[in-house]
Length: 264
Ligand SMILES: C[S@@+](CC[C@H](N)C(=O)[O-])C[C@H]1O[C@@H](n2cnc3c(N)ncnc32)[C@H](O)[C@@H]1O
Image (cartoon, rainbow, N blue to C red; front, side, top):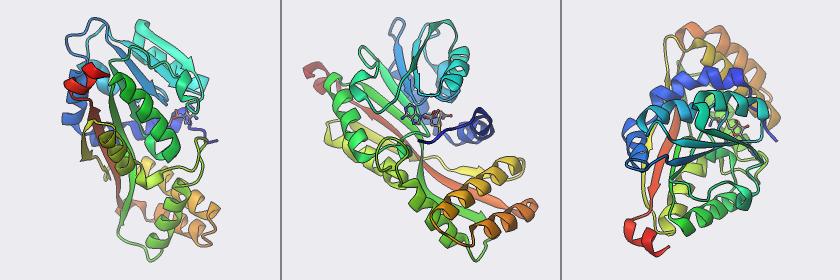
C-alpha cells in the first residue's frame, strides 16, 4: 500500500490548482447548482485539495463526504470542508461500502492512476446505477519532459511509468492508462464524457516540487531495477536552476444524460 504525506500533498497542490482545467471544474460544480445542500463525495481526499478547488464554486451548504484510509489526512480535509464535512476513514477497495447513496457528484483528484481496471469497472457500475456524475482531475498520463534533456531521461521515465502500473493497494494500477480507460468505461456505461489535458508546467518558483518529483521518479525507477536512477536524480537536482519540467495529466468529467438518469 502507498502512503502520501501531507507535506508532499501541500507541495504539489499549487501546481495541481494551476493545472486543473477550469472549464471542466466549473461544469462539475454546475451538477450541484440549484440543489439544496448537495452531497459531494471525494474519493481519496488527502488533505482536501478538491474541496479547496471546487468548494468556492458549489453551494455553501454543500455536504462533503470525504473518503480516505489515512486518518491524519482526513482530519485536515475535514477542516478544509467546514461543518458540513463527513469523514469516512475507509479503504476504497470495498466499493459497495463507499458512501455514494444520494450523491449529486463524486470527485477524485490524483487518484485514478492508482486504481486497477477491475476497481474502475466496479466504480463505474455503481455510479451508473444511480446516474451520478463523476469528476476526476489530474490523472497522470505517462508524459514527462525535463529540460534541458539528460541522456537517461527516456529510460528513467519508462521505468517510472512501469512502476506506476504496479499494485498500489487496489489491484495492478492503471497508471498512465488511467485517464483513457476511465473515459472509455464511463462512455460505455452511457455517460457523456469530456477530457482535457491538465499538465504541470514546473518552471521558476517550482524548484522544491521539481526536486521532490525527481527524487520520487528516481526512487520508483530504482525499485524497477534501473541502475542509473540515483545518478540521474543527482544530476537533475544539481542542475535544477536551469531545469524545467512538464508532467502530463488528464482531467475528466462524466455526466449521465437526463434521459438515462431518469430511467436508472
Ligand atoms: C495522490 S493522493 C491525492 C490526494 C488528494 N485527492 C489531492 O489531490 O491532493 C491519493 C490519496 O488517495 C488515498 N488512497 C490511496 N489508496 C487508498 C485506498 N485504498 N483507500 C483509501 N484511500 C486511499 C491516499 O491516502 C491519498 O490521500
